[in-house]
Image (cartoon, rainbow, N blue to C red; front, side, top):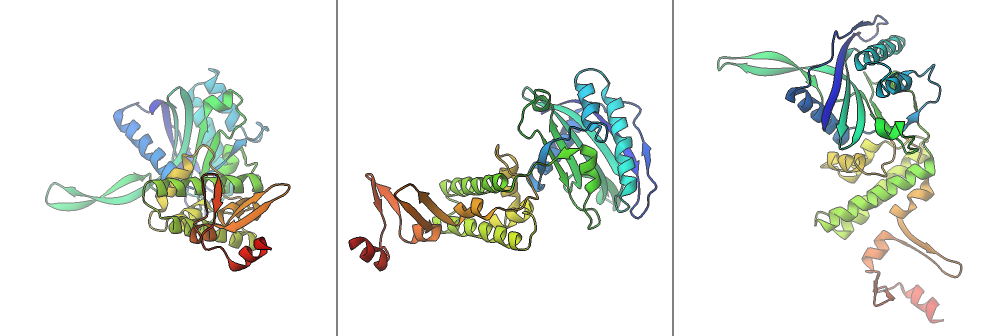
Amino acid sequence: MEVVKAAVHYVSKIAHSDEVAVTPAEGLLEVSPQLNRLVDEILESYNARCAQQSGIFQPDEVNYPLSALFRAYHEGGTDFLAASTTATNRLAFLMRQQLLSTGGHALYVHYMRGDEHYLLIVKLNSAKGSMFEGLARVRDADHLNVHTLQVAARINLSAWIAGDDNRYLTFVCKRELGHPSNYFREFIGCDMMADSKVESGKLAAVVDEYCKRQMDAGLLSEDDTVAVMRRVFDYAVERTKAREPINLLAVAAVVSPDNAEQFTSFLNNHPNRPTDEFIADRSSLRKLADYVFSSKEFKLTMSHQFKTDHRVRVENDQLIIENPPVQLVDDLAN
């Protein structure tokens, strides 16, 4: 990762107030090892701890001007500092309308990874900490909290400008003081385009691949894998019955209660990652609970638990079922 340009502005606002003030930067941030380290830490937190939503920019650039601002920058029509300042003023205007939003540092980073250009936008809050002063006392020290990102977005500028139809935009909108940070989604101008069947199919595929990799590494047994996939399926069914969306951080806790960040990191770096907050389609997730094969003349449905318990497998082009149910044997014998 290589930082190209970066700017930070400060937005002053306290909760339950509509008074917002922007302190704009007078120049770009110095590109330094410290800045690179900070951006690396933010990206690590973004990838490992955040349930990301994804989509594309809204085509309406009048009401959602962020895309126009940074297209002009990317094409050389405006400078980075001016684009980020205008964007921050727009962010402050939207925050004024959401009383429970709080201020912080609005950081904009243009960076490269390989040959691809990215734009990172994140609002960073300060956190209280402590440090030793000499060897005599402990004193308070403020630091930037990169481990709890409330709102952040990452745009693959190269894919977007090239007209890539895949989702080039991901963002995080966690709750602030228990309330959704909807202003940030409007600030980004993201069209979610979440298709229930498509996103459910992606989730099932990612969970299945994760479990297989864990099995190959000797970290999950076959029984454990069956249990994990069943838990995810049951969680999705619960959300569907409650008419509530799938939350990927909750899925991570279901998959790996003791190390949810590991699955979140795997999911966020997967090329076929589902978006956060979509309504589950039960039929598309069925593969997590059952194995189904269907053709014109033959249909086979069995649970993953049955497959494990009866060691269903293929050897020398023969399908083997150990200790098959008596009724199945009798029906086939007749």
